[in-house]
Length: 144
Image (cartoon, rainbow, N blue to C red):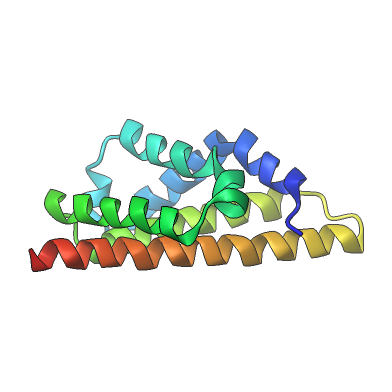
């Protein structure tokens, strides 16, 4: 069972995670297209994903994730963003989220360790699905 406390921690502190993500994004030099996006647009994407993380991890189906992220992949293609940059952005958001939990969550008991590991597993699955469907949407747009 995923720790609702940790999920709420992420949802409640999405802005701090977004700031970490922006710092990582700006520090990665080969992301030319992403580095030109307005900070407000990047922050909004973080908000949509992280502020509703409980929904994505608990209530959403793979079909819902597929529909949304294939649409985003299609949009990234139309924007002329390289697929590698779109995928790297998802990886960096995942890293920023996990780094936040590791840095801010106080591990006191074995239950806390288990909760953190379970969250990492669930986040990994969610972000992997996001990557896959983003790439599918991008590829389908390229075929059209």
